[in-house]
Length: 61
Image (tube, rainbow, N blue to C red):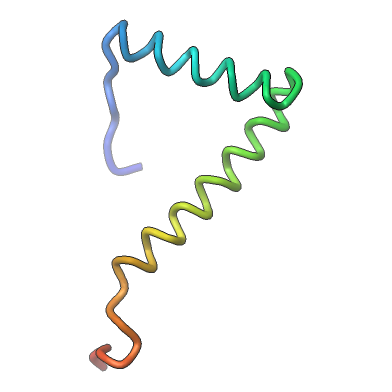
């Protein structure tokens, strides 16, 4: 982990509300919600990594 994020009470409450909605979306199954979040984060990270990579014809090496 690169850095630690500190939330104020308003941000924490907003995050809690979103987390509760996400768990509710998964019918209260927190483990299922956690697994889905891990998959979603992995996909988003892959997209970010692809944006950072140089275009295929322009790589050095």
